[in-house]
Length: 464
Image 1 (cartoon, rainbow, N blue to C red):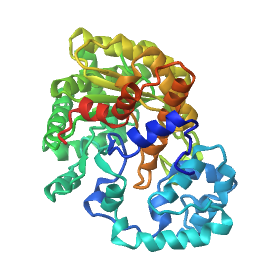
Image 2: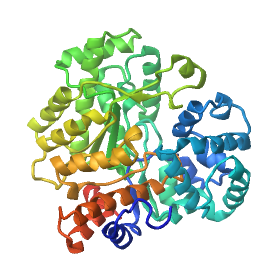
Image 3: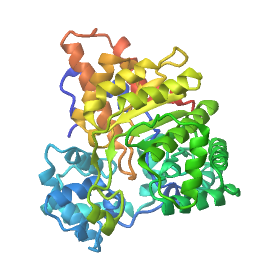
Image 4: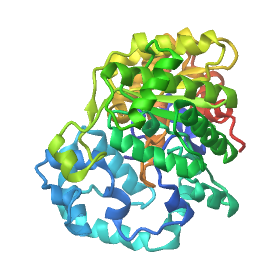
């Protein structure tokens, strides 16, 4: 992993080192805990900053025969780290092998391979550095040249940490993202009504009928905007675009509010109505709406009961997406209220569907208005990124792409931006040296810089 890592020719090296490497990072979608930034958290050891909450690593450890106590259980932090170290050699050809060593190199400067023989010394060295102020949450972001991050936040969130960060004058902008998934999760009446109580508390208003719900969510949308939010995000199995009437939705909401279970048809209608409302809100504010489509979650019922959600038991789903996606966008577009949009698919079979659907609804108002987003989750790896870049190149305008994000809960994940930049420069460099595009860095260099940084800055309208 030297300076030429993943750069397979001289043109790729030049594009990376002269145009991509030193650009700031705009991380417009992540799951960093804003409270840890507000408190400038110091991490007790490598397990706390690197393994806690990392379902990617937990999946690999389980596949390697590691007991659950070393993943989410009660083993000591050092024991968990050493079990991860014992797993790392078995991750060859998995992106975790690259990420692990990139994250040890930067910011820790460690270039040894992590394995059982090196684990103890690496754990000691990293823990020693983590004890220094330079390795606090905020200083790690500074080291990684982060300019802005957008966290992922529920409408009922007070955003107190974002407000504290801004009031303290922290130079890296930390903005919220409006993620209203729980407001659509009507499958479980008890859990849903419990969530509505939180929303009532956040708004100070009673939510008795459907119009109350929309009003409450709109007030939180307004509040998020006041705090600098410029993006929404939706984690969905597929798009929802069923036919419904206002009377249908009022009746459905009354039923769920009284604690009754909904039929599958009612659930689809309700989600279709509310998703449309969110689209209208985003357009009114000039926001960008993001859609993460296709995760099949909590597949192991036993492990869901034992350790809960987001612990590494989700997979790619094979949901039908094209027809409802088309209907959803067409409804908004017919009213001329379709906001800027980024589409992320989890099933690689949907790459071309997403890229071509985005092209259907570009309207000349904004360069790259409809975006086929970067490789997400299981596709956030070398082949997945290459396939996304190639599909977008073939069916859209790669030059207008808003580039990479971490989608991570870890302050050590910023080398993923570097990983993406190397892959991008290598693909373009290969095209140049194959004679497929001009050998002209006045043409390709600015394109690389735009994809890695400037497009995102211009597209989202952040005040930087």
